[in-house]
Amino acid sequence: MKNYSLAIDQGTTGTTAMLFDIKKKEVLGHCNVEFKQYYPQSSWVEHDLNEIWASVGKSINTLLETHKVLPTEIKCIGITNQRETTCAFDKSAKPLEKAIVWQDKRTNDFCHKFKNNYKPYRKKTGLPLDPYFSGSKMKWLIDNSKNVKDALEKNTLRFGTIDTFLLYKLTNGSSFYTEPSNASRTLLFNLQSSNWDQELLNFFNIPLETLPVIKNTFDNFGHTQGLDFLPDGIPITCLFGDQQSALFGQACIEPGDLKCTYGTGGFLLLNTGNEVVHSKNGLLSTVAFRNNGKSTYALEGSTFIAGAAVQFLRDNLNFINNSNEIEEFAKKSNENNIKDLFFFPFFTGIGSPHWLPDAKGCILGMTRNTSKEDLCRTCLEGISQSISDLVEAFEADTNVITEIRVDGGASNNNFLMVTQSKFSSKKIIRPKMVETTALGAILGSLVGIGDIQLNTVKDFWEIEKEFIEKPSTYYIEKRKKWKVLTKKIFM
Image 1 (tube, rainbow, N blue to C red):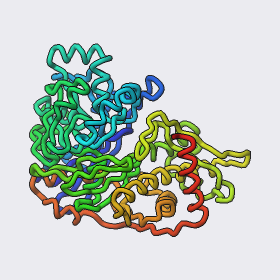
Image 2: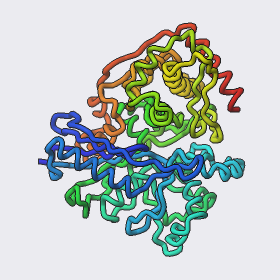
Image 3: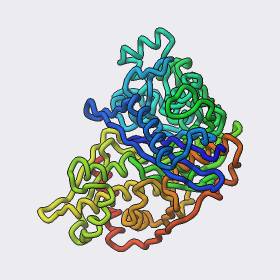
Image 4: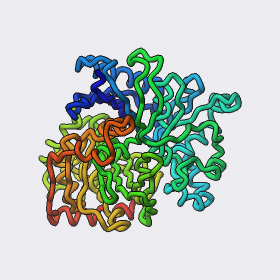
């Protein structure tokens, strides 16, 4: 019997495989495999596509073995992925270069130089011209990589985001597709036509034939073929950009529903229904998902560093041995010692709402009395202050924000959630399943294969805890100082 749906959640620091028991309507288990990050130059971030592919196979193998599930019992597969990260490979699926990660800033000079030229296209894409997005990365590869140039001349070049590369590998090169939640992050996609736009392709000098065909988010994307860890013939029925997948996994399928994911970065998405809402406050317009040819849109706020700030304390400063320890250290900090201590986690620039790619992280206000505990707490405050900047931008655009559904690994940190509630003055709702990115791909795959309908997604979501905190004078004053210092230092 084919009792399980498999999600492949390919993230920035690792790949998670998740199994879902279709009959019991519950997650059976998940397995994460990390891979190496490459920093060849300052502000450059790369991934090895072969290492990513290896992590996919290893995570699936380990998951199936751990739970004693046969690969033949898998009914369908959903893929969710780090968005914007750009892959160049050839028709044989051989990577031509390392993937350029969404955090990478190597195209900053190009984006700055042609910012005014791009302005007429902003409404088409819903996005600013920023190194974050895929279009300038593709252009950079064409301009700077001999392997990519040669493949382009031979008509063997394939561009894609991670979803496209994984799909191509899973189907042994027979499926070269993407879908709108990923395509709308490239600067090459027209929100109204729901397809690649020739004017945008001309702007970046990207040939149409190098790009995948765009299908619905929930669709028939092909079947597994020629793999050593899965049998032939398993249908792949969902592709999903990770933040939109988390929105779906949070059952935010109605206009006005909002979620915040605390992953490597922090991302707020608001479902805006069938309307493309254009922000006046630095937010992004994007596609949430497309089903049966009909698009549902979202507003998005993106802060590039959230959980990665905790990793910085762990890996660079050796303050903690694992990320979970930060909560206990933060609790030991005294508010009286840190009124003027600020942690600005802008290691890879500022995203929404200010869009300052040149910004750098900094810690301000240290004294001889500043402790490890103080820095741990202000690190968590810096994350929640950045998210609160996004919340205020959403309120300015929509005036509908009353509560935030949270997910991602860092949302398990109760101190961070309390801090978030105090800085943003919002109710924070945490579901029982915080791995909602993978869950979104699971549910999407079941929609794609026809087992469930969109309106039944809510049946899979359940509240675990709510945080409703009234801010004290400390939080009110520190919020004011944060906004003053952000403007003074970075703008």
